[in-house]
Length: 107
Image 1 (cartoon, helix red, strand yellow):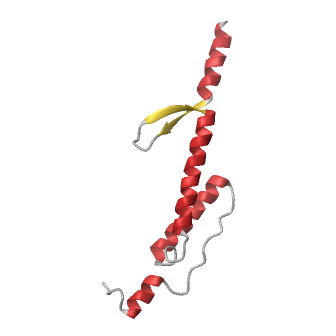
Image 2 (cartoon, rainbow, N blue to C red):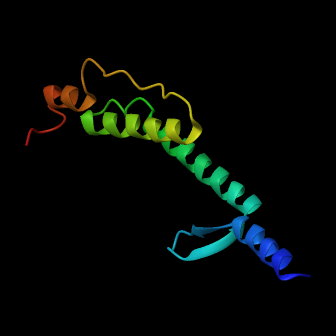
């Protein structure tokens, strides 16, 4: 094999792998197919988090939870290339209802 072919083959091999950081922060190399699987797993995790955060009682509890839910929807929209369907602001936060009813003491 000539040097040009060998160099080209190494460049293709290098381009087809990517560095991924695992849960412990350890950087690992993986091939393109593994990268897609890794991305799909992370997208599934993000979808699960969004489903939890967007449940009634979570996103409409207070302004922080509302912003968190819409921020997750924005991140998902960016990653998928789709326009996010943001949650509408509720007329009253659940936390405020609890304060009015005496279930939560004001600070």
